[in-house]
Amino acid sequence: MKCTHFLFGISFLITAVNVSCAQQSRQAVALFDGKTFQGWEGDTTNTWKIEDRALVGGSLTETVPHNDFLVTIQPYEDFILSLKFKLLGDEGFINAGIQFHSQRMDDPAYEMIGYQADLGKDYWASLYDESRRRKTLAAPDSVLVAEILKPNEWNDYMIRTKDGRIQLWLNGQKAVDYYEPDASIPQSGYIGLQIHGNGKAKVFYKDIVLEEL
Image 1 (cartoon, rainbow, N blue to C red):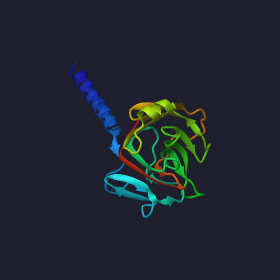
Image 2 (image 1 turned 180 degrees about the vertical axis):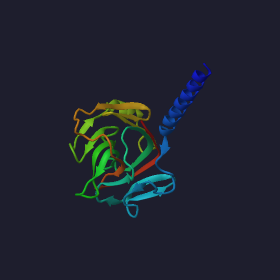
Image 3 (image 1 turned 30 degrees about the horizontal axis):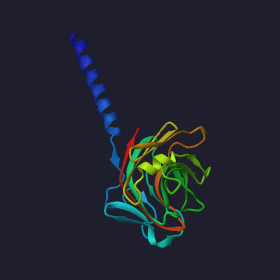
Image 4 (image 1 turned 30 degrees about the vertical axis):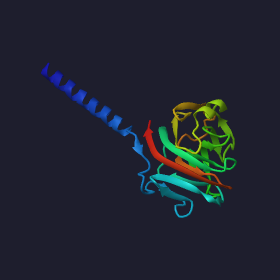
């Protein structure tokens, strides 16, 4: 009996350690330290800056020549991503978004291909397929968006992706719940912060936190 109790104790300890390690691996981590571009790559000379602990893309005085992305150096699969954003500029031209399960393209080299949690007039909290199907895959009710969006202010955005199911929240309200029907569409890849081209606009991203599932 003593031996049995001893083995049971060892088994319980191993299980507890495994559970603890699994919980630790799922802890949310900050993808941006508020001070440097560590963990990110892109045009940090002209397009992307750091201002007041936020990653900032674009300009309100000069036209952004083309879409541009600041991209994580690490790919991710299933996760919950939360961040705050603010988008400024001429309402008719401002647009931005958060790429995920995405890759950089070879031609044009500044573009990305993959899912985008969209931002901008007529696209707030929509799920768009950038450079691939080139269409909105799912969109929230426009009445809901009008009620919860805070134009020109900080807004909360959350993306949850797990086994082909993609959910988007804007300011705590679920906006999109989408199931990918095409098994050939990759469900892993890089995260990219976008500023859309051909307009004078400035986008701010901060408090970027990711929890792998």
